[in-house]
Length: 477
Image (tube, rainbow, N blue to C red):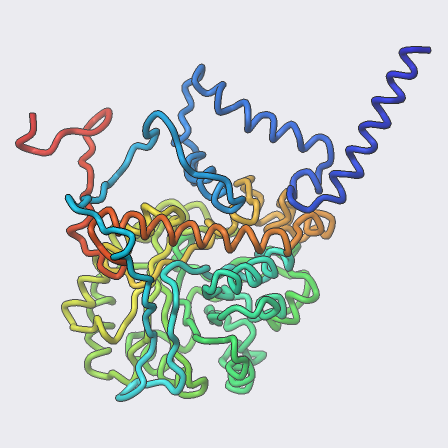
């Protein structure tokens, strides 16, 4: 009888725990997987101590290691990022600290930067003043779940940052939070297309009429699949996704390799001019650096035909992310941002376009060190997609294209989506953005700068790597 009583109490306790897990909103894994989800948290907690007995260091995981993800998780939850004992990191670069860092009373808030010019060839009727240097990069509605998009929109508003739509079109979830929006136009022109795939000026005007939509972005390529258009498996093309994109429900959504009406530099400039003329708002271009001749020809055309010059360019490195792409493109095509960003900023300087074209850097820049590095290399802004996915609770399960994401971030399964509470996760999005800003400013102050606009290449130094580790610079003992 005693055994039966104990068993009954145990089952009752498990039932109560199940109900609790389903009702709470702070932990998506527990909400979607009551009771058994605790095994993940136990393993995660014990792993910190058990890893000292194995050969798998925290920085060995791919594509984002445990140190990077843990920093984002702690920041999003509002948990202290202070650490003890010493660094576990193996840095590729370090910042050159000043002998006399900036005092608290000398610090200056980030002043913001304007995108788009008010006068002259290529001027727009409504330039945009971006208030922060760290923002949310494009992730399409459909690739992300409705709940995830809602959480990002609300969190972006709290943090005062912009959010790009991705190439999947503008959804009500993008607008519900009230944040500033970049409407991205991919090669299929989802959301602004005619039935034949060409640009619909009527739809473009309708989207531009939204006050929240501050800028438009012409997407030539993204880092994970340069040379191939977007891919959304048919299982994720639900009725609302199909309606927003203007495509059939349940069928694979595969964009053309490039814009059908943009086949050379001059046509690119003409398209930028056309969109800016219709919308009256800044127009940028997202691309992956590869062909240096293209970059030279493009910037030369910007000087020759300033009316077609973009207001900004977003450089996505070849290490950029996606929900679905061929392995050959993910792994082997496109320059990494570490090579691409300095190349683009140098070209902008050669053609004296610093005051005309803003540069946005993206591709795995999710922690303050990498954001500060990009600003040192000449980026005006940094955009992150996967960093904000981690802030939503993404555990890098690598199931983005399946629709079965266990945290609901990229899920299409209604049960899994329901586990992600937009109200709770919006706060985490805002906390993450704020923590990145604060720690980038800490680096700037350590370098003797009053704010991050003063970053220059001289403030960062690459660490030379030798076989089996680092090697000392020449001339050192």
